[in-house]
Length: 268
Image (cartoon, rainbow, N blue to C red):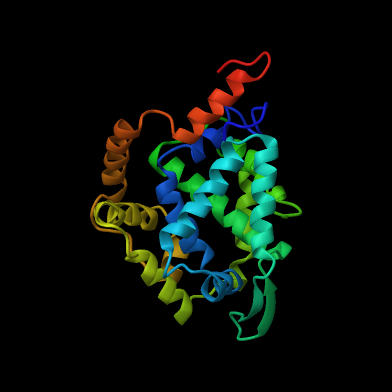
């Protein structure tokens, strides 16, 4: 994170720093996984090729590393991180059954699947932030426009560039989405993952907020009900207490600011 001599693709005043550097990413990450598993092609890649059961924290850490480097790293670091993920995805391929039981082949680096994963990620992280914190700098359009850079780095040919385009892209996948036995299995795992005790105490609150902030259509397809308890309010309190412990800036942001401050003519 500290290597390089530029501020990266975004910078200290960006929507991406605000959203992806916020503790709301804990909720956004859960939302992203719940939404992404509704596409049987994306689900097949996770179900058949990942070690989400045996190493859930390892997979989470790798995702966090990619997110942090893309958001806060130099342009070279962000580009290298995306290339690394795409190399890991190269052997991830196979077949899956569509919503109409048609067998279809897939590859994790397919442009169509990459678009779905990118759009679902953007929807999930932006939705969590706006529900818990309000609009980021530049509003929803600002975040979608900026984060399109990450989509292009990951091989998405034409990522959405504003919020209206993002919603249109998400809706274009509606006919592909389904919730079968394998999706139910992963959803159940996400509801009660085998986490260490301290995380096990907090996770139900974060999961509740993820469900509460899901679009109604996705929540219905997943068979989930909005919690009867004040999940969003309780999550705000939980994240506020966590912010006191970790400080106003994440370690990634602090490292990025140190890097930028060393760049000629820069100060943050």
